[in-house]
Length: 238
Image (tube, rainbow, N blue to C red; front, side):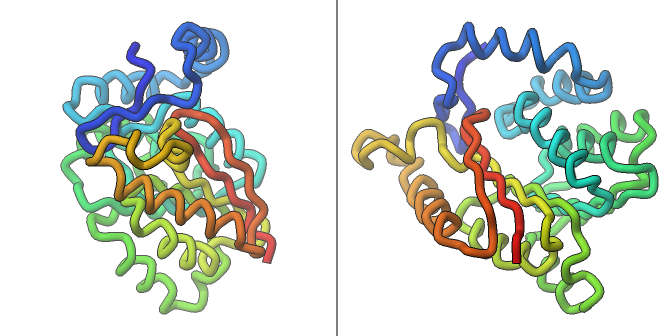
């Protein structure tokens, strides 16, 4: 297993630099508890050219724990890819729970769809093929949607993370959780720009600006977890 996660065409180093320790964590704490549908979807995703876009299973385990802590029933996901985190959410929330899942590419979602169907959780998912911002704005046109979501997971275009965050602050309830993926970019956010591959510099800068903005946002409590190439966990407090 390569100790990297790729974005674009260049790999991000994972936060955990010891490959052997990462393998130990997966083998000891993650894979033994990974539900069979998720194992199947992870393996199906691994055959795809962009497999590195998928949610890492250790990050998925963390997401599932937060879903249970807040007793999430209504969730939203921006960026689906083949649906690992989506399936994980669908398996975790109650049978009458609902997920609004938004992605620009349905063809990737359809890679995981047969596994989602076999797991018996497709009825929980409302997949919308679209750019996310117009859909979020459409949701906000209905006052009943404000503060109605228990949980949100965002793994999409980094340049729009703050735009997504502003909308999440209206859609997710006080006490709800929002998790943003890829917020440490391995170690790149902490390196001088000249040490970062040129293709990654714009996204790195967007991520740095987003992290700084979230840190200064009094509406949320935050924790930066060094899982994968970084996840930023927010709890809305006002």
